[in-house]
Image (cartoon, rainbow, N blue to C red):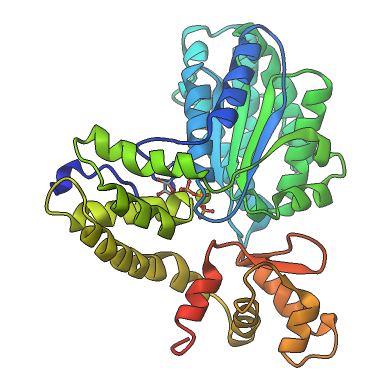
Length: 394
Ligand SMILES: Nc1ncnc2c1ncn2[C@@H]1O[C@H](COP(=O)(O)OP(=O)(O)OP(=O)(O)O)[C@@H](O)[C@H]1O
Ligand SMILES: [Mg+2]
């Protein structure tokens, strides 16, 4: 069908035509915005789940709503940086500076408190090797939040920004995607700044998103992190929501599915948002006209599966070393999470610690995780099927 009207959005972080099944997280975000406008506080939110379930697009939408309320927001995608904390600080500083410059209430109301806040953001940034920008602004770096100790500096920063935020009934929020990859000292510093803010009812929030290891990673960084966040497990869509995610964008674009064709596509996507977008996109391309027929759906599943193999699975598989691949291939035999005990036997090892190096490396690479002690599973949905499908060539 007409490619210019194709509504599907396969691809990391691409805003879907309908953000289905996330009403609860969105209303929690809206509630926080409303409470902030009334001078009340609430809890930061942490999204975690498998690859491709829609964490990034949800985080983006939460940020968009905070921006629309005039909040001071900054978004960072964490990466394993070689320069660690310095790099993480520089990225955050760059984002914060640009957020502070564009925050609507602050552009119109340059009170003393706003100037003080901007001065602190400026000196925090200069210390990070970003700026100064004062040549074009009326604000000079205040010298605060610039000790070089990340934890103290972040606390200063938040403390100095809060009075200016309160004046306009807005909040400051940092949105950190792939938070499991954030430099450890930056993560600890952020958690303690957030903790202090919560204790004081300050309008400062951290919204994070990442893999299923996130709750454990945060708890390890700071023992109180468990209580600090509204943790949300972002899962595959329910059968009904998956149907909506596939059928409603087509309907809006003036096309429909033959019911059997829709069922076939839904059966292959297993409710995973990324899969739904890939199969929807292919079905649109394969179908000469509406309605999308069973034959179109069959072809779309074949082509879509090829595309997923290339885009989602193969790139991740190739990141593993031969030994790590052996461990993943042994895991792929199981339909459910593998027990470490079974893997030890299957790989002809003697004890669990014989596997722990590869296990830890794969966890660090974000390819597997431990849903519980003694269990291992893939972070990419249906990765086991991919490995089995290609067991001859891999
Ligand atoms: N609620 C939803 N309804 C329909 N499609 C969605 C939904 N959420 C995300 N998608 C689609 O799913 C795909 C993956 O989304 P996204 O990149 O946000 O996932 P992710 O969880 O961040 O993945 P990763 O762990 O790889 O970063 C995109 O193609 C997006 O358009
Ligand atoms: Mg993502």
